[in-house]
Image (cartoon, rainbow, N blue to C red; front, side):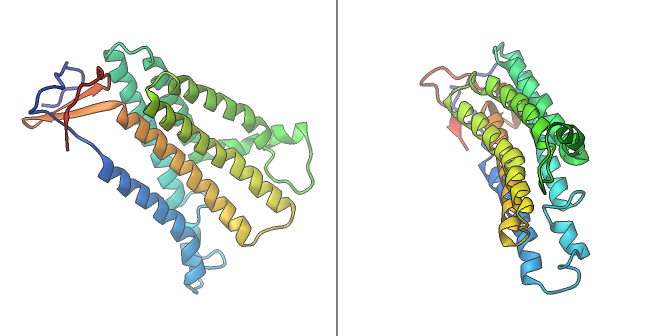
Length: 253
């Protein structure tokens, strides 16, 4: 029977720490494949359905909302939010001081998934237009979005600097990639649109944006998973927050 918070002796030889590297590579592969398909299908297949806004192109295009890549990106954010909340619960059971930061970050990821699915950020355009005006620049939401981005960065950094080195690098790096794609990628696209660019450079830019966001979420997920010990013994699974004394080892699978 699986137990979430029971104390476990990690030095017991019969216990095996389960790792999820294979699953991680599969998720990374799907993420890369979707991004590649978005570019490759219309470029390599000459058919009305795959070009000129045909149904297959629209279904695979990372630039279009409400399709397969959007579903995948939103799903990654939802999974990350749930995993962060679970890690927060385990951290609280272990009386770790950073438990609250896991819960805050889980809430932020939940809001990001809501934004990704419902395009809340694009509704901030009206606020941006009241502040400044740019000839040909379409993404006015970036101005209030900078404030939201600062709040997101603060939430993740409060968690990152309370974790061991590997966790700090994972959370901080994931946050940096996520915001670089969401804000930096949109800024680059807006500047290209203002210059009248809609060719290959523009296409590569918005694909790089989407990929950076997803890779950022995957880094955050990896950091959360590495903060938990999943042990198997005699058919039972036990989860606990990773607080290992120096020099303590477990057998790995």
